[in-house]
Image (tube, rainbow, N blue to C red; front, top):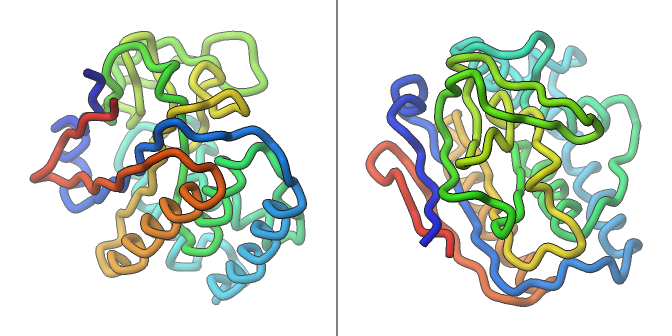
Length: 235
């Protein structure tokens, strides 16, 4: 039985964080209608405009809270939360492109709610998956590269028994476990560090689950991990 565990070394730094997870089984992630998902993203891009209260991206609350979070652990220079990268593209007028249905769906949710969303292929995990601090020797081959780029010691990472699968919490993921059209079982997550946005966080999780169910079939289950609920089964 595979598990997802958030270890104490993470809670020591972020005791009030919440990690929302949608575990999806027996889905069909093949691309059938790029226009539908493109429209989904376009609508979300427009909704994201409401978060730009200040022309300086880093001054907006939904970005600043993650800038502050990333100061609490060792990060690669220039690493930013995934939501900042998405919002930066929207602010510059650059459309978010289609990748595959699961990624398109979670990108649309990420933009609509201004929360970091990500996903991995459960069948590619080796052993359990953990959100923890890195030892510093974990194998990590990021998307678009061929050589390993291990995390720093103490860096927040998602990892399994083979290596890191997402560096700097939600900054960059490994090619090994990425979602593809062949993905049948998926681990999707939404992360919260701003407690005042818990209701939006819950709404985002429910909408993510609903969109996957309606568009990709299969079955899915929502879980929320916190300092008092540190692990779930993902089988």
